[in-house]
Length: 248
Image 1 (cartoon, rainbow, N blue to C red):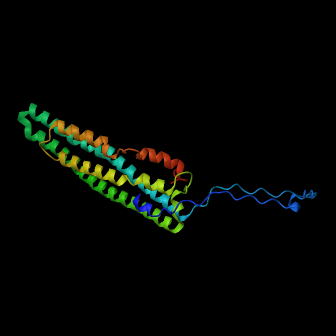
Image 2: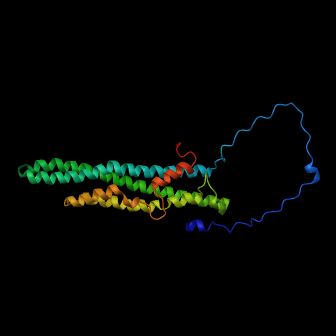
């Protein structure tokens, strides 16, 4: 992360151990046995982990916002969206077949199929608009995460970036895991837009419609590259690394 690089300070100080001081003779005397019969002091409660700071709460809130955006994107795209895409393609295929075999009732057959297709196309326009909104929300969430990590590191010092937040993941780990997401979802948004435009073409062939269905359903643009993590893997990690992840 280029913006994080400037926050990394110099190398850690020397870890040469300091020689222990020898105990004085008086400190080695055997203590007198306590013969008091007073009841033992009550045991103190076990600690429940480090107290959460505003940074912990802000980080968890942003991560949950990202989760909500990503999961809603998938739910809409692979649910209502995919049904509408298939509806357009199936209606077009059925219309072509019906017109070819019923030349005497072309107007009656075309009217119902065209109306059904238009309903699906209107639904896809709404989905495309919602996807644009979800993309803007995702970008805003990742920017907010970057801002809170950088501002907190500036206040606490560069070692904050490598300090585990809850378990083992550091602020830098959380930020680096999500920075590729806007690029992926921007590519996916472009594919959604191209698919909708293709489906509006009345001259679209059956083969082209089939390719649109495959492209929409696969969401290849959302697949991670190299050592990047996909959302499923990240969600599994957050369940372990983020305290209270499953509570909200």
